[in-house]
Image 1: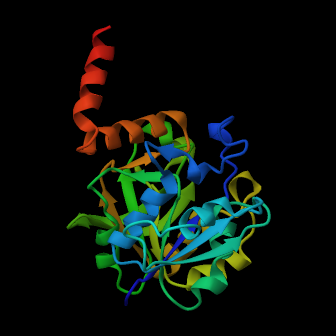
Image 2: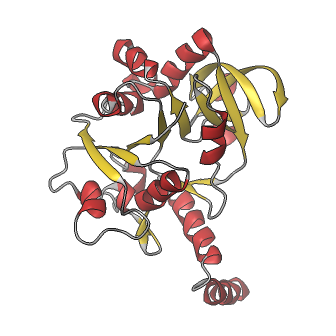
Length: 270
């Protein structure tokens, strides 16, 4: 089954990045000279995605969509179709994904969190697409204990084979009761059945419609494939993650790397 559409939720309030996000949407915060959302879209396009569904809030002017559709096309994205859908209230990540239901239709789709920045040259989205065979595929990452109250974690069964583990459940922000050390860093492939689950789902952790709860139901019912990945995503929704992403990109860009290394060396010697 081909995966040719990606859903990118972009409607989060960005409270952990205030005051920068009082006016500027979180996905438009720049890493050097491009907003985070552009890197995520480029990651999808490089993996063969031709259509991007942006789930945005009701902010006047459509700034996230406008970045891609106003003025000259962005090099490398000329043939990409962008569709906007609106999440009118912040009811959680699961609700944001549900908002894309009519735009996606009956197709499988890639889901990517807009604040998870890919380490330059290390995208694992193609691995997810290659592993897709008709049921959900989840990127899973070994995480330290400090993330147990920040991310969803999966329940696994069986041994790891070729970097893939069988997922039979998931729990949102489990704390000390985490079922494993494998967290969900924000890259998924879903079949359209996930929309039915999200539409029927009751609010979960934090009173929101949690995507992790739908993953739990899917995994219990059909199983899911967990593709084990390295620490190749930076959480730009927090200041430390944005700093790490900026440093990684600065060191990776040929036009900036030498100057950036010299500047870092000077600062470290002070």
